[in-house]
Amino acid sequence: MIKNESMKFYLILIVGILFSCSSPDVNNDHSPDSVNVQKDTASQRDVVVSQDSLPANIYTNERFRNVTVKHLNEQSFLVQGEAQIFEANFGWVIEDGHNELQHGFQMTDEGAPAWGNFKFTLDVEKKRANSSLHLILFELSAKDGSRQFELIIPLP
Image (tube, rainbow, N blue to C red; front, side, top):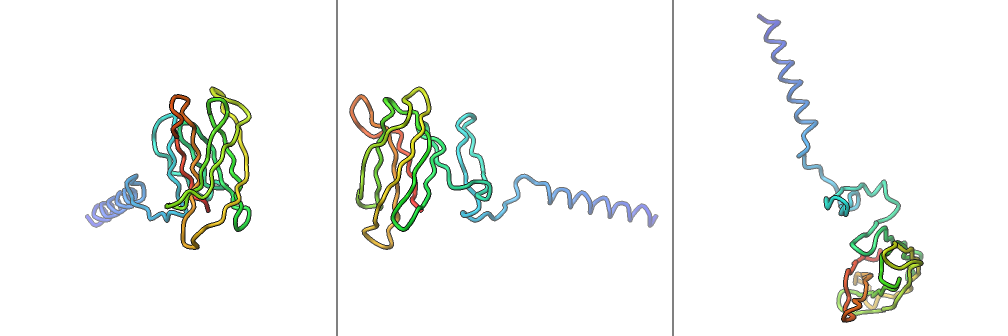
């Protein structure tokens, strides 16, 4: 009788441990610095990627992919990635949340439908010390010149 009760206890204990360790719905506390959620464009699912496995944040949308921004010094940034852009020409703007600080255009090494590579540096100075800078990459509409496929990237 004691043997049977001991077996039941160990069986319940093992099943409880297995359920608590293998539950896919466990709410793990990931800080924003350690987890990056990216859209898998092939399957349209969110993919959680550990920051430790990435060299930098990688930004992607329908026209831009594998875009990274590296902080070179206090005011300089290296921007590189790939774009599928009509006539290989895209625009960019740097904003601080209120004002447009700089704008310009860049070229990729190939036009759509191919994915062309681009790489350029930016030098920008904040007008206010507590402001956050954002780089916005975009394609200009051939129809009306409006900005489309904007990719908003916070500058580090």
